[in-house]
Length: 347
Image (cartoon, rainbow, N blue to C red):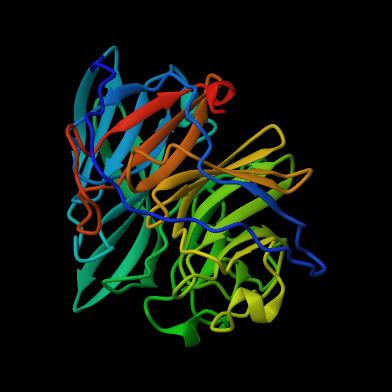
């Protein structure tokens, strides 16, 4: 285990008080920005290159991606590289999401979302068999529009046992509201790549009209998602099946977001529900955001770690990946890293 010493670094970021939003699907938010850290943070893995997504195997081992194309397993303080994927690591593209099949003990399946080049830039979702390495690639969805920016990339299994994926608009806002394009969407598929019978449009699309969604998490059967807005206007949504969230209109224009960040740029990525709290990683926001889903109270936490990319819950602990080496951050000692903290200690 690495020592719990992050070093000192200066980070410049200012926050303003939250506004009150009064639309049909919006909470009334109150905020406690700049909350004091009264917590014990443990470094789990250090000196990584842009870790993007984290998941856990049934035996407790942590698997994670690094955007240049590396898949690794962490166990008992040791890191083992299990795959190098040929990706188009260009801008925001590369090896992005990872998800472990809920029936892994029976099928050994692990899933990746990654960017590739074939004349043009695309993204795909592929299934692999994991023993000591990732083998037997089966492409489930191919030719998802991609670009150097706005590739989405989060994949997670829902409580219904189906795989959900976020896709960006590939820098073409017209794609988001087009049911014939897989860009700017939340997709939903079976683990063999087939379309669920109850998908709303008879294809992979579950929800649409999003700019660059990068976070998925559930509270019971309710799906939440995060999406990047243009120059603020970042969004947290309570996702409804078949809903069009109307990008390129911004969330202050549509009134459809559960939370519309008009007062500063958060650039939200991975999200995680813990009981009645929603934890949201902020990239440009340089923080972990905690939203009380019952009261709307909101806090800013972990503001000294820089850009945060993913957050997942395992054995009652939050695992959080930084993204300070992605070309937009200020790397500090040991960056990039994955850290662990008990959410009860975040005060």
